Length: 342
Image (cartoon, rainbow, N blue to C red; front, top):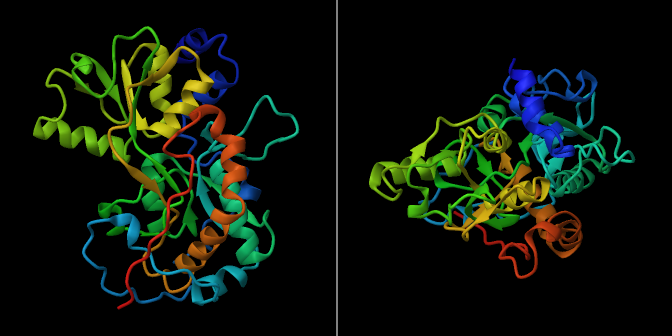
């Protein structure tokens, strides 16, 4: 019955329908990649035989995007453990349903079963620097709600999945310096009278993903009066794209998510659009296990320092410029600042 309903509702949406159907069941099929590409999870950072560094006491968190350690090209115990694996590949948690970020293009036969997008380009750059081969990667499809548990449990070396750097998350994982600037924004049907994150949300059902900064903002604003009182904050879904499915099925009236992701979804589905401007400022970072910043985080920061000069612009122009448009606040890589040595 549910399957028939989904098919009927999504009929005629082409690639977005296929991706939305896949995402609607993402909680059940959290790891959709073939076993040969995923591995057994026992060789991630924190797994057996991996040396653990000792993390210095973190400074007070006021600007979380500026608390990553300085870049370094040196190897260390964490990188050595990755290089010494029998299956010598980097294990990375990614999305496979976010259009132009990490996804499979059903309309591109040349891509085959390969993932592609802005985040995927960055993963290849990291793998090339650490292992000498941009394709030396095991991709793991990770739901939004499972990004931090996957890192903490050693199932992945890192997560490159539109993950915002926050003080709360810095208590749980380590982050690279920022590689992308964005902000929260509202997505709703073109025909909707919603005008943004304002009083037009009165009586509207708002969808967000579990573990996302959007859900945290909605929850906080609901508690402290920052959201119109009659707005309905729906229970969060496992994956952000599940919210687009709910919009398409008429089960939600608006979505709150990162503006860069929302723009890509609006490009997928012409029946929805961005409403109003961004109402927060956020930065994406590469997330890794705490204690690995003696070598792995520093190495990723070195990759990012080089990537901002050669690679970032090409990837942005290819994947994101067409959907974000001219004069976007995201059109340049954020300037990196690092924590002071102690």
